[in-house]
Length: 414
Image 1: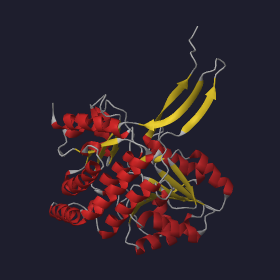
Image 2 (image 1 turned 180 degrees about the vertical axis):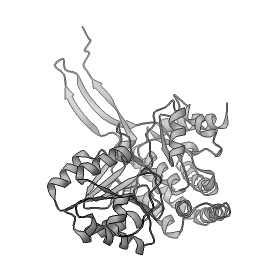
Image 3 (image 1 turned 30 degrees about the horizontal axis):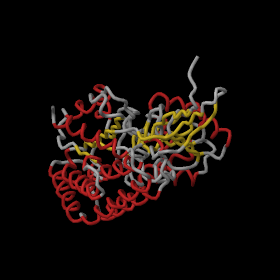
């Protein structure tokens, strides 16, 4: 039996213990974990600094470095996030529906933990904590497999969480970290049918494709985000500028940052020069089609394609024919993550909101709001671009399943 399989089986056994904990016991566990992270701050920070130093030496890009760094602000936010999750309502045990049958059977549909959730992710060490605490709150154990670039950070974080679990009389494997970051550990996790109950990959398209190729367990994808801002002919220019700059520049390395700017052909020559100037002032490198270059009044190189997730200060611009042109572009080139329309025309907005087949659609607001905390869910485990079970920011409810509890008084089926 390989180390990954053995670890997974221990985590599965830990999941069965977690499922029986009360809400109070789970909350105490999470608060203990927050305290343990605080007490291990020095070791965790030093481990992260080593990872960042190694990443820089290896020539890792600025976007990935941004995701990797666990600075003082992010560390404080991470720990605060653990305490926030402890304060959230526990969905486990919620009665979703209850009814009686003519034969007297009382049937209840009740939220329950999923079991053991495997999470495969890249770069961001805070995912180790965010994922673990959300799963723990819902009575699930986690089998975590991070990227090699964050291995020291992930191990320091997982060790702190495991120490807290032991303090509460639980096995350390309630948060189990796969220490083999080689590519072979991913297919091995994907094949753990009957052990892992759900697999959540978070990362680039290559990682997603590998998981889908090998998966024999259910998968919910945290896929790439090719997000769009569509500036309609009836857009308020000031609002269009503010949202476009925010969606692209506020934190460009995130999956909910806008990668493509779509501009309505009607009025493009009026609004596009203003938007291009604002983006250039923020240091954004721009690509565009011929119509965008003409409307902007400057040369723009054509993008290699319209499906690139740049994850940095780079943006593609395309001129489209109204709402239907924007929707056609989204269907052909989008990733169904987050897309926005900027307009003062309610009918146009409603047409876009109905037609855009994305996990989150916006009217006069930035795509950067696609986030569990911003939606009021507390922390999130990812943003699903799937349509089954969970879609968009995945909070606590999306980490539960349900079962039917049937109570009778001796009924038998004739």
